[in-house]
Length: 116
Length: 113
Figure 1: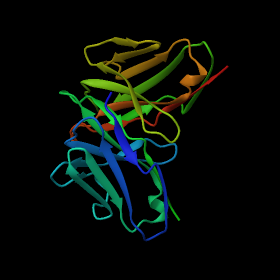
Figure 2: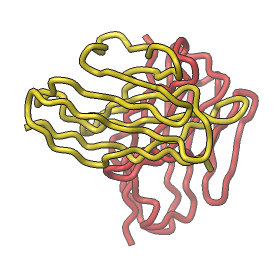
Figure 3: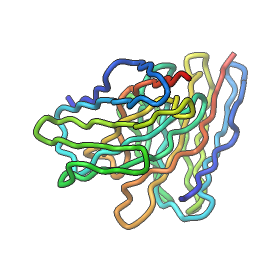
Figure 4: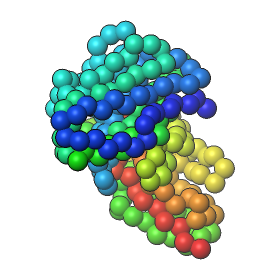
């Protein structure tokens, strides 16, 4: 199956700093990638849809100026958490769909962000 | 509003038994439904997809049923093994976000020897 690689797997940062998370499709091109967030014992929640060469589409309630998404190539999307606060601590996961019908999603390993 | 509900947060069964997980949904008219496995601290891994015109689908020890009238899917793991212990997520395609998915909260399965 397709491989989506996410980096870093864990990061600890201080309040007020910014953190960049990378999501790469290793063996396929992804014009669209998705960023999810998951709190403990909660479901994955879609944050935004990352579109190669254009602006990301954010879900209601997600601050686009805080969660900056860049999808500059067909194999890389980045999520930058700016001016991080402890409440931004969460598990962030990216995914991409492949194939003509794009019914199957492949997920990265996830990034555990802890803001102290 | 759209909802995806999965039965009980945790399910404990003995090795060798069949685990049955339930997914109910409201306010969706899905063309297909998916099941994923998620291990702690990891991203979900795709397991099975079942289409609206399919009643049942199998893959090795996994079986999924899909009843669009009841708006329910059942996920079965036969001859369960401790290695099957994980959280299992039910997912449906979102209406207005391309190919993004909505997920249930998941059911945590623990298979004990």
